[in-house]
Amino acid sequence: VTDTCIPEMEAMRRIETHIERLWMARDQAGESAFPHQFMYRLLLSGALEPYYQIDPENSWMLAAARKNLPMFVPGWEDSTLGNMYAGMCITGEVQRVHTVRTGIEAM
Image (cartoon, rainbow, N blue to C red; front, side, top):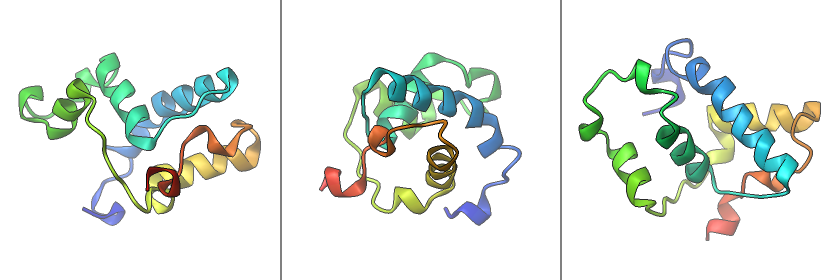
């Protein structure tokens, strides 16, 4: 799946506010996490449950979050979420660029 296949208003904008809050909270606490760890926290919070379009028991991402499996996402920085994060760093909403840990750190 590439970003051009994901309807922006239906997917990305739906999680934007939630993920931005998580990034800012970690940033203000001086903590860092990998991209998948932020997504796990968001999924496990239940904030997205009203928008589920499949049975949650059939979601590989939710299953991975429940087991806290490591996930390797090289190139995350060039994703839609990566671009949202970069924008928040540029505007100063996130002060520490390494609040979201990089692909190099995962390697």
